[in-house]
Amino acid sequence: MIKTKLVAAILAIAPMTLMAVSTHTNATGIPVFDGGNFANMIINAANQATQISQQVNQINQAIRGNGLSEQMLKQLGISNYSGIISQMSQQASDLNKVIQASNSLKQSVGQVQAEFKALYPSAESYKNKSPDQMLKDFSKWSNQLQNANATAMQAQASVSAIADRNVKIGSVLSESPGSAGASTVSQIQGTNQLLGILGQQMNDLHQVLATGQRATMEAQAQAQAVKDSQRATWRESITFKNNYNYKGKNW
Image (cartoon, rainbow, N blue to C red):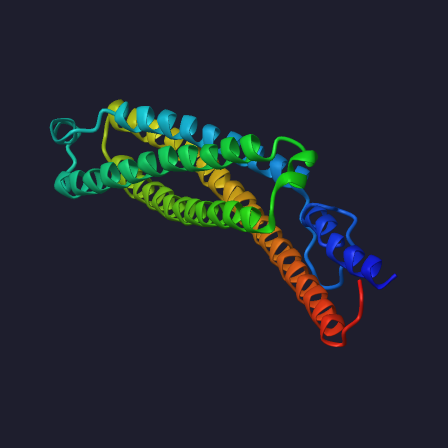
C-alpha cells in the first residue's frame, strides 16, 4: 500500500510538463502562457517588420529622388544653402541608421518566428519539452525580442529626426522663387507623409514586440514553476522513502 503511494508520488512528476503550455491551468499566481497567441504575435511582428523594410526602401528612393544638391540650391538662389547641405548630410546618416535597423528587425524577428515554428509547431510539441528546454528557448527569444524592440525605438527616433529636418529644409526652400523650389518642397512633403506612416508602423511593431516579450517571460515563469514543482515532488518522494527505510518498513 505504502509502496503504491510512493510510486504514485514519483509518477505525478510527469504530467507537470503539460502545465507549461496549458491554457486551463488553475495554478495560483503562475502566469498562463498561450502558445497559439504567441505564434500569432510573432507572425504579426514578422509581417510588420517586412512592411517596415518596404516602407524604408520607398522613403530612401523618395529622399534620393528629391535631387537636392549644392548646385541646385545655388541655382534656386538659396543664400543659406550650406546649412541645408549640412542638414542633408545628417539626413543621409539617419536614413542609413533606419535602413540598417529595418534590416536587423526583419532578420531578428524572422529568426524567432522560424525557430519557434520549428521547435513548437503545435500544442502537442510542448509535451516533449522539459522545463529546462523551455527556459532555454524562451529566454533566448525574450532577449532577441527585447533587442529588436530597442532597435525599433531607436529607428523611430531617427525617423522623427528626419521628418523634423525635412520640415526645416522645406521651410527654407519655400522662400525661394520659381517652380523648382516649390516642386522640391512638394516632394519633401510627400516624403514626410511616408515618414509619418513609417513612424506609426514602428510604434505598432514596438507594441507587438513588447507584448511578445511579456509572453516569453510568462512561458519562462511557468517552466520555472513546473521545474520547482518537480524538484519538490522528487524531494518529498525521497524523504518519504528514506523515512520508511530508516524505520525498517518493508516495501
